[in-house]
Length: 514
Image (cartoon, rainbow, N blue to C red; front, side, top):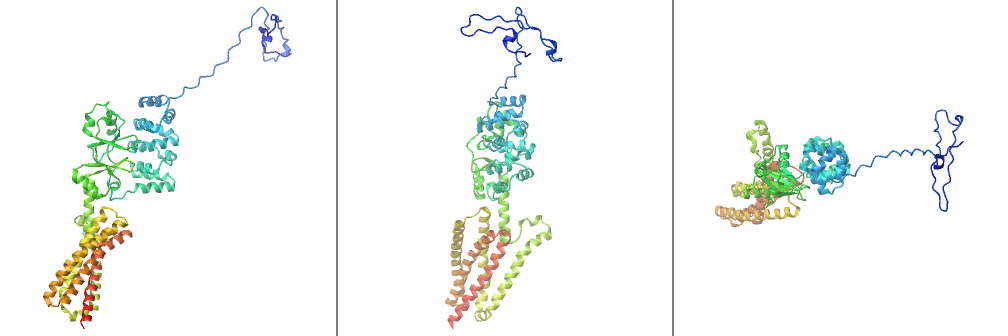
């Protein structure tokens, strides 16, 4: 016998359909025989017509769905969410915000809290946080986190943002990050990190004090307490959430302000800034005119990437002067602190080139023995002619080395520079040639021979000026140390060419006189 589950089977009333006069009485269900039911399942007694059936137990209710996480409006709300719900919901809430607001809140978290969120955030969110936030404010966090876990996020960051970030880290950490990148991306980042050492990017240090403008003074002071030793602790640079330089605040003003005041309310916005490509000459001009202790360096997007201090500038000037002196004289100004044998070895290349050039001059003079025998006066003025060529060559070489040490010249700038130096050398040569030619005429009374000697002096000095530009420029192009080899080579070539012009002109004079 089949047991029905409908209302009629339970003895409940079935409502009448349309047109029905009255509900039909329900007959009581007789007791089922024991054999018709499985032994393990007892059957309930049948309900009588006069006894109402017990009400059906309500189905158990499912737990209500979790309330949706709302985007945090303040850093306190974000911290509460992180503390109560965990890093996952906090990261999800940050992902619901726009990039600017998300960066503002993330920067106001402590490094341990930032580490929690970065540890569970999706690669896209982590990449956005690392690229949108001021990189200097993330150093403490990145120093504590396993960078291998951030590899998927790091690969999504633009190369310039990643280079700016890696410049903040210790070299071993930066190399660890680069090892996580694909080879093309790592190559791009390395290239962006390699600033020209003769520019602000090459002179700057990343050890400075900076805080985001969205922080309160109390939070900023707390951040500064954990900062590494800065190069210029007297000033605190203020940046926006993207790392762009917005102002500077003296450390004294920050310490004297109320802890609830915003950093932006006490900063100064009228500050001089350097670009990463600013040349050493321009940097020296800024420091000498205003007496700065340090100046901030920004990239092409006005993001703060470092500072140049007065000590950095003085060290750069000293290095530039040392390289010029060594290039012109062949001696290292730091010999006083070098070992004797090391200082001796440093001078030998110059001496060797001088010996070789002297032998070359002897060979050239031997080729013109007959000319010297007929014109003894040539030997008398020979030391003067050689000294003038060497003097002009040394002067021009020092100017060229100083210019090359200060900045790179484009091809057009190099041509203009070479033309200017050639013109100067030509004018100086005309003066020296006229003076020496006039003196030789007074000495021996031969105007034509005086003209030959004077012309040889002028031509040799013009050629010396040209060599003094061409030789260092060629060595620079071939990546040879110009400070070590320019002077010896220039002077050797000047001596050889001067003798050829001097004796060659005299030989032509004798041939014409016969």
